[in-house]
Image 1: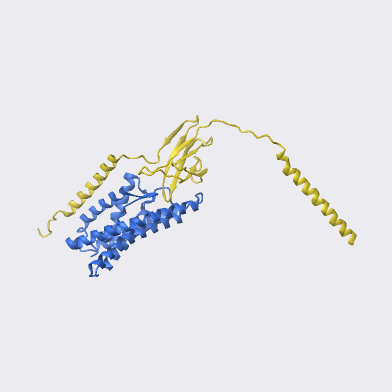
Image 2: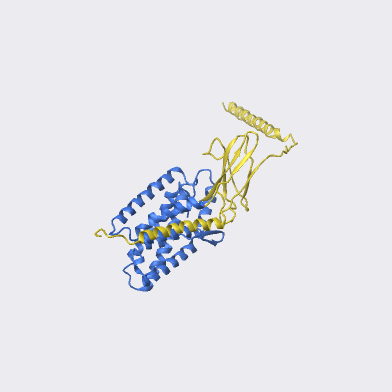
Length: 211
Length: 161
């Protein structure tokens, strides 16, 4: 889910930067309003490292291969910290590995940042659910839903920015194939979030910001 | 009046036949040249191969070739073959030609510098990294993250002290 440089038109790229800037400003504002904003920084830092490395783990799903996104896990575990963490991770990925790009950092930040915030809201919304199986299902839905939302945003940005010289039909088919290839990833990430949150709730519930 | 009108009809029918005959003649004109020739010449072509960083080829991906003097308007569009290859021959414009390959939002740009005397220099869109290089870079970033985590975990002196 990384749109590289040179794919989107200028308007969308700039719009992505503005939207990502707005998301970051809101997130930093919410972080600053916390009693001790520094308390969650070690966790945010380690999750950024995990997010950064995860995109290099490719899972072959013929005819293509997909990579872990972890934006659901980031949102559930980091809350508002997820947005700056994702942007930093994306910047490193773009500079070091050419995954995504610096001009599309804003767009990619929105594609992964919004699902992370949605996962945060869902985790907080289902926090009061008492039954362990219901909680596990809610966590699964959080992880899977974040992937689906990210893929949906990715496809929407691409379709909105299709250049005139491109064979639109062929590109739409290719995008659709990519979306379908991400369905197994949604299941995998749903299971990852369910497993991690269930484990942390039992061992150290303080680790989950959106308890 | 009625005779006149009949004559007009006849005339117009004649004119129709005449026009149809002329059109037939004009259309038949080129067909009278039966000979066809092929001028065969060797040219220098540029061949690219598009691959993902996993090593997988980008087969049937869309290609756009941008000339040096108009980097916004593609001069040639096409598709890579099943093995990710695309071949094209730039015209006589010198300068930097850009080749963009994209498939479902993933893509890369490569550049071919065509000199005045026909020399070409090829610039890769992005350099391929070995796994050792990747691992070293991941380790550096992870170590930076651990450092940041430890920095913010350190006990802080209380203000009262």
